[in-house]
Length: 461
View (cartoon, rainbow, N blue to C red):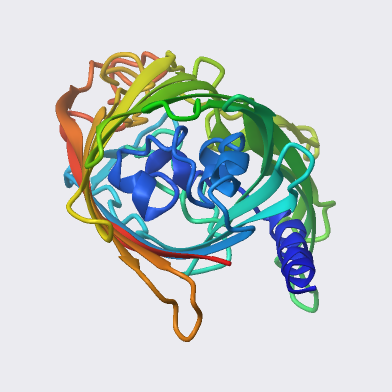
């Protein structure tokens, strides 16, 4: 009865949060302090609820270790800091009334939140069928959405990607002889909004506005294979993730009466964006345990970014009505044209056991830029290559509170260095007008770092 109640509670928890799940903390940092300490190489780890994200096939392998129910809680804090960008062109005649220079806003929110997870061996007699859930819940707000700037310098991967809830649900089963298969779902959404505005400028009148919105969930499946032959000092893992975009569609119908008793001027448009995008990915990894005190973990991620959709809002098909005998037209929106490329992300780490209760972990990963070249032309999307160094400590406490259950406590510290480079803008503005300057002119330095860490607690029943 206790296990059934726990299962029902976490199932409700999953269904509720799936409608809000948008972020991908696992891709940027790794889920759980153990996988974070190992550079995010969690596909071949089989002893934590975090495998519901990293490799659902490993859920059944983790259940093989004995306990039927595992629960975990974690805390994550990572602060981004970017090189200041000052005294550059922030608007020109391509996007505004005229030329203006100033400083670019570099105040990005830190990633602050908690991770909650569980695994439950649902049908031990049927392939050891096990389900699992891992979630990330921001502390600062329930969700933060920001499409960022289309032309002003923007670290678009760090603006809001980890500022929303994330829930990953997976299930795995054993096929025998150390082979496991699993599948999971990653949630996204489609946000649709409609606005109606009428503006009055005359006395004895009132302006009005109405806004409606709806959010529909979308699910992106992912699949895993895990192979850990009995009595062998190695394991292998493969995970395939399907792509998904969190879309934002907004329609505005507006009218303004600014010429006394004359009819209002209508202005209607649609705006679309992909606020968040997760690429298709193939992850291959494994572990080797050459001695009783050393485990080596490695993983390679192939991420397909060439179909990336920019988060900036794009105004399309604006429509206006003529005023008297005159008329005017409004230009559609525009986003910079970048060449997005597929990337290979190597990850690796080691676990060094000093005793049955103490483990030291070291990890590293390198993430190249998914934008080809330096943005010296139109546009200022910034995605520097990243070197991430991690260190962690794992402790095993024999008893959890008054229960005869061991408690695992994992700490981690991460430092990510964004590769520095210089942007030097070419002459003319984004439309080729030689008498104007591009946004970001004359140029600026790119770089920065992310610094933080976290702690995870897990207990088995």
